Image (cartoon, rainbow, N blue to C red; front, top):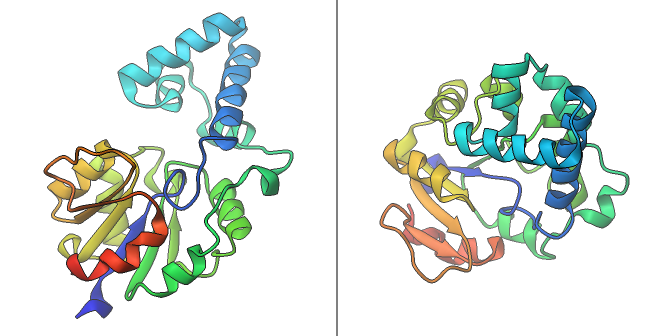
Length: 214
């Protein structure tokens, strides 16, 4: 039955387009944070961020492991936006598309909860999800770490084989597939890896593909 299906959505570049405004702002904020708190110049801060990203998959993990950075402090100060309404780029039919999907719906994001909820509100879809599972909920162990996926499923009594993961990140979809979830890749790419069940170029295409995923 489709009513037992659980849709798990990434946030950035899945439910909205973060590339034009949001991601550049976060990148600048993270570099500035390293400059201020580690007394680095811009070039050194950028290089350290790249190093931690390559080694750990996230700037935050490197900062926590090597500098004792408070993750809450880091995420709060790097996810402040002077004009979020102007920066969020959403699809006009997003709310309508989500309404057409049967079953429970969750947001599962590596972003902090204050930012995730603010973006959902700007998109006009903040009341459409059973829960927002942010980086705080997974003890700052971001996707693609399997820990967060398992914690989400345990907390909300979800069976992975009845879950559909909707993401722009292939690494995150790979983890979801290993757990038995169906996978939807939000991308304009032509080549689709075997662990992706279907590809869509935009989230509003999802209802028309949904029947093939149950």
